Image (cartoon, rainbow, N blue to C red):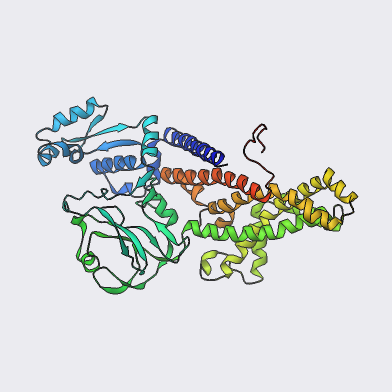
Length: 494
């Protein structure tokens, strides 16, 4: 079994790499780089050479090309300042870049210029996969103004009084820590890096957009490393190294080291948490309704219970999801339910009722009809006829034999349903203005936010592929007779 699981994981990783490669190739070959600037409201603020520099910086950030200004490529000169002004070594360095495949473009308003080179398809893929996993380490920080920084890991007490693994010289101070938030154990040592979001959420890392809190800042009484106690929204466990040249007196009042670039705490959960909260509650309700309903339909085939169930399933399948959502929303008005989630916000339970009911009911019809089909199919098996011949009651036959076998295909889909709750619901979240993940992918595609599209594609593809593995493993738990590996002298059973 271990060998099988390892093989499945390796194939899953390969599948993810193939999916991401296709996605990256399609994005960077089918979307001209000029188009991503059409959604940028800040472009109109620049003119002349400043506009040119801005465009090429954005294209470099988006991953289309490499771009260096005189101050960048003159850094290797013996006299960088003079070189950047067009002096010594300037022409020699430019010629070297041109020989390496770069194009030199002169500015219109000066005698200087810049060098640029479009990435080839292989380079695009290498750049993505080579920078995907960022492993923090004590040699991460390179600060010329702090050359004597200690580089080591150590055990310390975190801001909340619990033990933590900290690091000096890493990007993040706290590498491993504990708190009261699920999953209770957190780490900053390994991060996935997808790049900077643009043009929506401009300047933020795509993972910070997805995982970052929302709403208003939470101010709490905190004690900082210097001993200063004050009300602050900073999350000290997220503090990153800040260059010595950018440390100000406010940082010095709070921190005894350069780890002063911290994220803030918010009173509302992230987009991922929001979508998952709605999705998982709705999923539990859906299964609690649909599985017993499907069993009842199968046990009372062609009777009024079955006919009502089939009528409900046909109704849910025939009615468009959008029409059903607005119908339930209209009914909710008579009970005082809010029409939009932001009206009452995260702190009021009434904000959750209608969206969860809608998501749950939309999921019931498929589980009901498949549960009914599996049970009816099993009821015609030979072992059921044998059980009846032995004199077992219909209740015993359904509960102990038919249900046990019919539930296996349903169980196989449960991990996927649970894990993919993270992706949210596009229509429901749009109708109720829920700040979740549902609208992120279509909105990112519309806005030509390439980095965000790549990030979401990676997340959804990875979750979907590994959810299939979890489903197969769960089947073996429910029914030990199912073997995922080949037995000696026999064929592999699926």
